[in-house]
Image 1 (cartoon, one colour):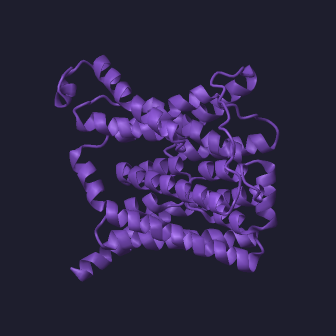
Image 2: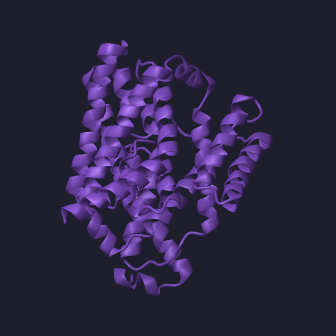
Length: 361
């Protein structure tokens, strides 16, 4: 067995085998403790360890672009008509809650940038409360340090899931029973699967050819939402395909780490952790306000405002007696607004934080 630092001297196939072998224990561990997006997190963790120890392979660019399109379709699948109807019915309440969370995350990002903990755009995308996968991909499109954004986003996801699960148990809600067995290779309706691939891959490449910012994620997502809710598309994404997608994205991110970046992330950890906890606390205050003044029950309000990924929140909400359409409507509205406002907010924070730092210096 070669020494870890000699992994870079192995042949390319051997380096790919080493990457897979290092990633697999991470994935199995995260699956065992029921972390959301275990494959994605495991792939990132394994790739970081591999990269720091000399592995130099890179994932093909086409796999990353195609994976962005598939993630876009995955997000679109959750935007069902009942969620859109709930959003329309409570638009004022949803808008106020979403704006408050975005302002809070922007303020915390500005604080991190002004104090020199992280660059401005990286701080904003790292704290942006949307689907973590999408925020990492958006950060990639707008030249933030995607490695540090991923570090911040998935740290927040883990903390939010742990706290949300604890709140559910404390309030006496059911534990959700046994995990549902996953059919990894279901029978696929050929037509809808082919149509989904066409929207995901075709839309991603069209956006890339047109040089649309973050278009490889956004264009397939908006196309799939429109086609799904007009009855022209049944989004079909088998689990085995999404595992490959998560692994491709995770390896793409993790393989960019080196010892210098990793040490910087660890040095920033206390302040990043404090910022994440502050964002969670502000969202908790917002949940109390929704309960007091909006007539929303406490757990629904907490899950609706929780700054975790919409996918992980949906898993908890689905096994709890809450207003699921309202929870997903607010999560969806926030996600869309973050994608629309995120580039402007990142640019604004980067500019003003840099100006403040220069004047202070």
